[in-house]
Length: 314
Image (tube, rainbow, N blue to C red; front, side):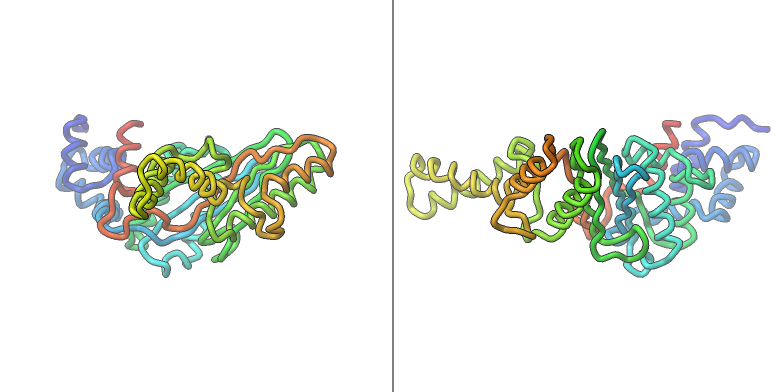
């Protein structure tokens, strides 16, 4: 058999756009013949899959799963180009499978791509084959995981498209040593709040807000005050109050609870702790809305490129 060098694999990869490991396998199957290997990749649909890299994938599904003990929860976003594909049972089954895999990993996208499904297939291979079969660009875009030692992690799926899949998913982690069923219910209600509040929270506490977002808001408020005719020194004093008010609007613990606007989410947690007679902490939340932040124009780095990079590192 001809020697399969790194240079040969690189050459085939550049010609086909397929993943590094797929190219290596193609060359091994065809005794190092690049032309025959190209045909082999095309036959398998792998070269075709890679060529879909310039098409935006902003549709798809978010999938969520909670562990049997309700101590860990995950959400994943699996994208395709069209809503039609997202309604395909095979696509939905794959999203559910990826969420199952996410429960067993550290929650990182690369870790999920490198892990195996219940059928023993690499997740990266499953997606590549789906791209080739269905004919749309797809990618496992993002994932998140929350865990507690004591307490509960709740999952809420809004606008469900099937079992465990939807267009919006929220995880909430509530930590405490009291009645676990009550903690799970309160966590579920907070998840409903995160999904339904008119202003989706940006962070759990003011300290966790992205400094860049705070700086941008401060700049906007300062400019607004100056344009109203206020001197800069007075405008800057006004801005501090406006920033505090804005934080109350975008920080989860400070928001009025949608099921009882007379109390904040923070007060709901404190009330729960009092009822249980032990400390309760809202440890974290995750809110995934399908396609948020995705450039609907020509796609940036896509799944095929990520798989190629991952394969090249293995």
